[in-house]
Amino acid sequence: MTGRDDPDLLANLRAPNAEHDGVFWHGDRRLMVFDADAASRANAENFADLTLPDRFVDRIRGRRSPAVSWRQVRSLWLSQIRVLSEESRLRALTDRMAAILDNRRDQHVDFGWLAHEMMFRALVPVVLDGLSTSDQAWLDRDAIAKLTRLDAGPGGQTRQQRWQAIVAQLHTGRVVRKEIRRRARGGRTHVDLTQPIVDRLLPSLGPDRAMEAVTTVLTAIAGPPGATAGCLMYELAKRPEWVATLTEEFAAGPVDQLYRTGTRSAPTAHQFVKEVLRMWSAPLLMTRSARVPLTVRAHRLAVGQHFLVSPYLVNHDERHWSDPDTFDPHRWSAGAAHRPPGGHYYVPFGWAPTACIGAGLGSIQLVLLAYLLCTRFRLELRAPDAARVSLGAVPRPLDFDGWVRLRGPRELSGRPPRRRPA
View 1 (cartoon, rainbow, N blue to C red):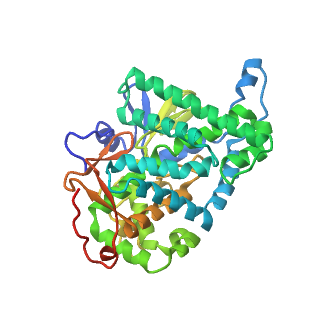
View 2 (tube, rainbow, N blue to C red):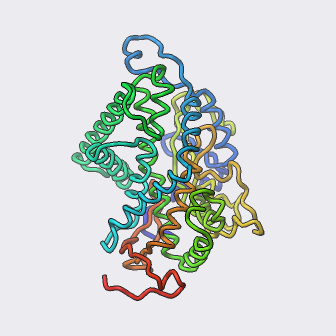
View 3 (cartoon, rainbow, N blue to C red):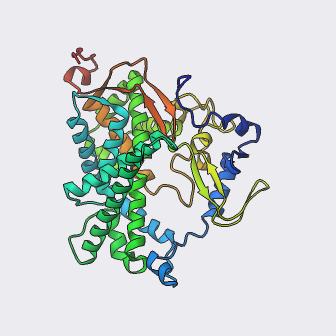
């Protein structure tokens, strides 16, 4: 799926990965842990103790902070995610995505960047609702700076870009800290991931650790969701037969049913999304610092040493997946000849106990995006044959640009659209 000269972050790792069954030293003494079983065990041992570090002010004063486990934070967020996945919230999430697509309609756009913008801006109210336009703008700048750094790679940014990224990050911290303080004073509450932090944990966390928790989630929604959405858009644009199949499924019931039942009322669309998540797992590599002494297949790691894991390679391991480099949503159907292995062999959202808290909501959001692109909008590619996916920090479609168009009655009835001039 990549061109000969396109970036492939894994190019120099594939051969030693196969030779050493997924665990080997590489480069500057970093341990590559690409075997599913080894990665699962290493992650579980490394994060068995998830106590948050002391507050900054307490470190300066040489004293200990109230102990707070990251599991407490995750537990609060998982409960809140269930609320944020209710019918009215999913409808609002879909409306935010649709508004961005409609705003870019009939303009020449890079679909990959559009996917990042759409997913990030649609998800910000899930994390931190009620922001002013100016505060939202700073979060947007920070997200763009982070994506630009990912896209450029090590040393690829100019001094001005690095400075702009620092400024945007500082302003994002200021925005989050200001909102936490406002809510702590008894301001208007919101249904988002920040509110339970303020209501339940702020006295023990303190403002700085509360701010870090919220900004961590903002950073998380600035990368992988948009990358995966871009790959979903790519697969739909390149596979009209799947668009027809999904359009038929979505037309079989009202959209309210989709909001009420999530992925259950669109099983084929869910299979399509699961295959996108498997095929184009983001990020490709994740660096972990050993929090405790670790032994991974007789390779010893001292505290502070780094090891790398790769959801992408786990999800493409031919020892566990049939024809892993082929995009095949049918592999997820009940009657598939080769059923997916599941468990820690399928890790688009990472490994326990640090797996993404928004996995369920993220899957539903991708199904809802597929719904929008099969029933209300379509992507018209400038050069359909040139589009492909490269493997950088995240999977990224290249030469994937064109126009967002509204679908007309002809398309919804199964007839091809009339060609429109660019």
